[in-house]
Amino acid sequence: MACSLLCPDRLGGSEPTPLATDLGSEQRFDPERALLSIGGCPRGRAGIYVRQPSGYRAFIPQSLPPGNPPIELTLERSRLLSDATLALGRLDAAAQLIPNPDLFIGMYVNREAVLSSQIEGTRASLADLLVFQVEGQSEYPVEAAEVINHVSAMNHGLSRLADLPLSLNLICEIHRVLLSGVRGQNREPGQFRRTQNWIGPAAGCTLAQATFVPPPPQKLMEHLTNLENFMHDETCPPLIRAGLAHAQFETIHPFLDGNGRIGRLLITFMLFQERVLHRPLLYLSYFLKSNRAEYYDRLQAVRLPGHWEEWLDFFLRGVAETSTESWRTVRAILDLQQKHRELLQTRKVSGNVVRVHELLWRYPIVTIPYLQRELKLTYAGVNRIVLRLVELGILQESTGNRRNRRFADDDYLSLFADVPNDPDETSSGADRQEDLPLGPRRPKRA
Image (cartoon, rainbow, N blue to C red; front, side):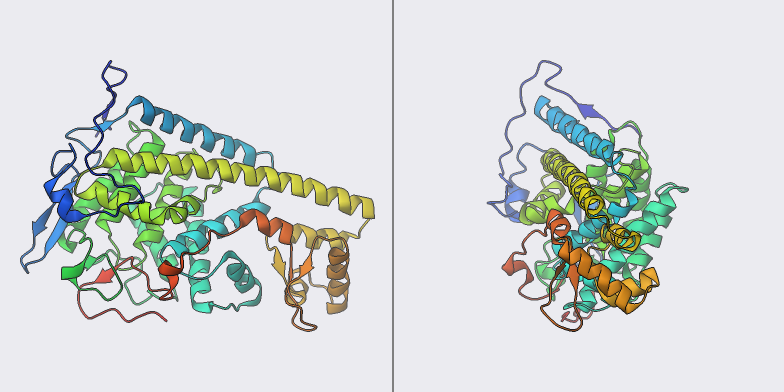
């Protein structure tokens, strides 16, 4: 299998004719219009709808890489690919400058887990996750536990990729971690679906109202096997391959729950496997959440009109922007680390104050009981250390309480600020639109 790319600009041709259907964030995807006007793409380029024996129509995707025609690599698209590759390389190189980078990696993983979950409607913030990790409680405990699982799934996958290639078996293994003990645990974790599912437009919608119907279960393994093979197709540039694979995975929608989160993890795992990234510093979900409507529109536009190129443009722009933002965060961490180190040296603090300060890079929200457990020190000893860090301006008490106090390194936390939630997307709580099963109506999530 080879990844074919047409390069009309290099052959002396002109830019491709603009597509007839504008699918930017200002215009939602209209499937009826798409059936009538394919905007210059051959009908069925990405797949076709096929009527099933029970009467509904399901989408049957074409194999990767796209053909008829192959992906068009114009000069502008080549520039986007080059910009994304360079930005990602600069980010990966910057990580080598951080002493003991594993202290900071957890915050990047935490942020990606929070943002990826928020795309699906989860309300838990990064602060909620950090509090839950330290105290075991949160304003949204159920959702915080799901984000904890997302972190575990990311770490599990990265650990396994050190010895194993990315495969369908490993994807199932990661899915099992993602849904273990949380909402979705009764939806066959770690197993590809054996029933039909569908997507949106809202929780509780019927199959007839669905925005998109993925392939039926009896076709899953055929499409998943092709996807698995394509993920290892070295004739295709890694970023192009990751973008195509993510869109195809979302189209196949192989699980009863968690497809969106697994699909976004797949991007990181593919880049990690190809050694494009040596550490999981890319939080692409920041870009995808900030452009959530366009993200869904571009994925849907791949399916009927076959607009693979427009999806790749969006994806590559996201990689470039997020890599640059992540690189700036790395630089800011280095500056903050140097500022704190000079402060601690000037004030000649004790070794235990330094120990607590080092722990803050991993857990920037702490309590005195938590520090007692981690450092095996007395309550009075930890209290003195924390008050010293408050005096130095590194920690701030965040509750205003005399008891059950909580302390945060606000300067460090500010480097990982959340993307604001759209009230229209979270007004119904955590009602995800990832997956809607064929059968009884899915209970509303509180």
